[in-house]
Image: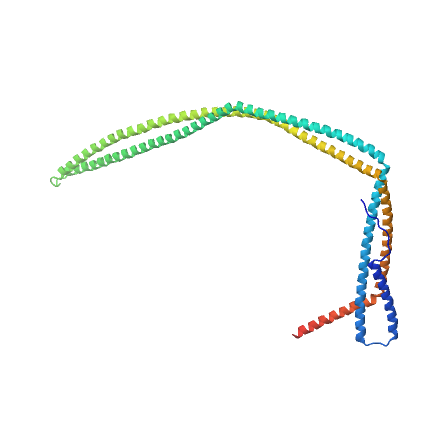
Length: 421
């Protein structure tokens, strides 16, 4: 890096002037102190104000001396850093100048080697990219061929599955109708039993009444005191019951015949529905087996085609990854070429400009003188600040003590007035 040379100059910094002013002030103070010892003592109020004023002034002077010293130290650190940077730069330039022939040979060889590697990598990347393109084209043709070959098997699988679904729906309908037929058989049987039970109950009731009437007739015939005409009426009633019994028995036979026909018809329908349901079940089993076979056949062919496509995809992906690696290798070789060219450019610049190196040496010498001068200034400011602190220690202590006392008095007064309220 280029830096402007700095030359040492007379020390006219504000910190040095402040130190000189402080020294004059200190001398004036010492002379004033000697004169004051010879004068009569003034009143205590005037002396107190002078002590406070002197202590405050001493604090300000010490603070200014510390500030000047800090600024000078900062400048010194900057000068030393600049000097160190230029020394490192000079050492680098001198090293390059010494090793210039070796650098020239090594970097030219590096450029040649890296350029050849870059060309090889570029050629390989282009070849791999071309191979990948051919593989992808083959893959697209293979997918089209597989789609054409698999389409009939997929259609067979879909149609067999559709037939199996139709058979399943047909079986479900047959089972639903069969359930209805079973319900009708049960209903007709229940209705027949209920009607026959009612008719038989009528026969039983009539026969029971007939037994009672015959018993009554027997009792009347054996009773000499029976009411005249009573036996005729009971016998007439018996005839009515006999007629009713015959009618009830006829109803039993009629109902049995009627219900038997309805139950037989329901039974015939049930048997028919059972046959249809069994046929539907066999059809479902057959279509399901066919659908399963078609599905397995299609899946086997599909997996085989997918494996072939996957193989081509993997080959294309491998070519793509290899092409990326070749591209990265080319970029790395290009970076090596650029780095070697930069090193050569810097070496040629240093070798062709010895005046720049000499100017850097002169600048380092100037910076060394500036740093030494600044170091002397810092040392002087340190001594001035230390002397000022020593001479004003008492006055600063009095000022700080007075401030503490005043603060304490103010606090006590505030507390007193607060308590009175």
